[in-house]
Structure formats: C-alpha cells, structure tokens
Length: 183
Image 1 (cartoon, one colour):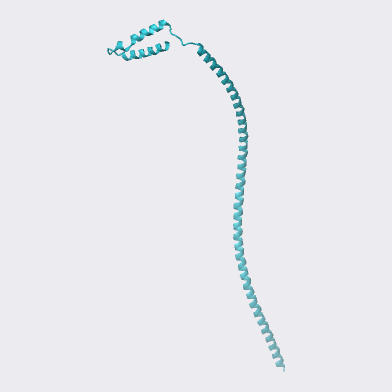
Image 2: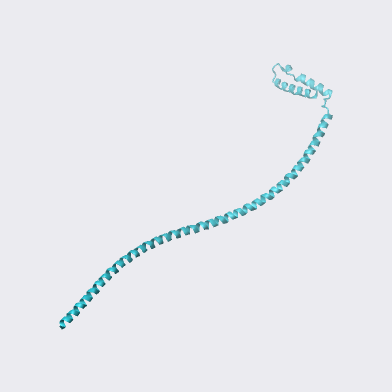
C-alpha cells in the first residue's frame, strides 16, 4: 500500500506538473502572441517615428526657409524704408525748389509786364518818330551823278562783246535800285 500511495502521489505530482506544463505552454503561447503583437506595434511605432522624423525634417527645412525669407524680407524692408526716407527728403527738397520757382515766376512775370509796358512805350515813341520823319531825299547833285553813272554803265554801251558787259549790267541794276530809293 505504500507503493500505491507513493504511486498516487507521483501520479498526482505528474498530473500537477502536466497541468503546470499545460498552463506554462498556454502562458508561453500567450506571451509569444503578445510579443508578436508588441513587436508589430513596435514596428508600427518605428515606422511612425521615421515618418515623424521625416516630417520634422521637412518642417525644420520649411522653418529655415521661412526664417531666411523673413531675414531677406526684413533686409528688403529696411532698404525700402531707407529709399522711402530718401524719397521723402527729395520730395521736401523738390517742394522747396518748386516754391522758390513759383516765387521766381511771379517776380519774372511782374518784370515781364513792366518790360512789356516799357516796350509799348518805346513802340509808341518809335511810331511817333516814324510819322514825324519823312523819307530822306537825296541831294540833287547826287541824283545827277547817279543818273550819269547809270547811263555810262548801261549794257547797251557795252554790247560789242567786251568782258565787262556782265559787270556793267550789275552796276546798272544797283544804280537803278539806289535811284528808286532816293527818289
């Protein structure tokens, strides 16, 4: 009977061990399933981390480009403000020059009106003197000499083909003009 008790105890121990082994196998299977699931989640987290890092890199690049653009914009803004200040200074200078030019124009217009008045007075005097002064008459002795010269220089006296024929014609024409002028 001793044997039987020992055999029973051993059988009970074996049954307990088999139960423990079965439970351990199930636990192991569960742990393996959980491990696979955790590894899948871990792999998904790695993929998500890589995507997040790539996105972060893109954001950093965009941020760096934005900072560069803002720096350039700030520089351009400073330059534009400088140009605006220069233009404002120029505008004030041009306004002063314009005002001075208007003053000069007003002064010159007054001077022009005064000069116009003086010119009209001189014009009136000139017209008065012109009416007073008669057309000058040549002295009779000069008229007689001019008539003699015209007769002597007339081309008809030189029609024998002398070389002075053309000269005589020119002298005659000039003398005729003088005679017409002097009366």
